[in-house]
Image (cartoon, rainbow, N blue to C red; front, side):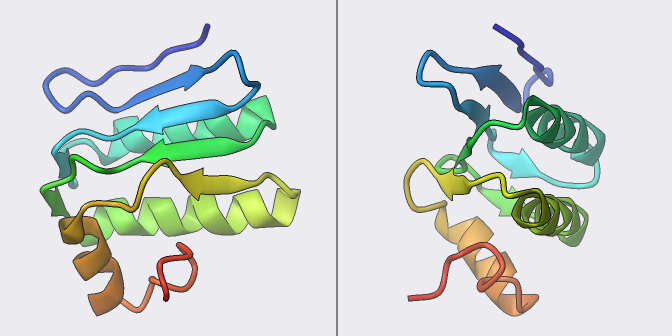
Length: 110
């Protein structure tokens, strides 16, 4: 099982038994941990398996993190790699995505 972890922020990527790659986000998705977020999402793309992102605990999301997530979403679609949210993301992530006009690329429009 491949894992990547960020201290305190706990962004993790792991292949599950269901042949998906799970990415679990911690409370903060910001410039301080965007490198780790990028590494997890890059590993998820390299695995070429469906990706499930858990962003339920996100309390803060900044533009840098949303740029990385949007690049991931676009690349996943180009490569035919399905991705979905484990549950509906936290309001902080949804609000930031809406402000930046990224709700559609993340599939957060209703």
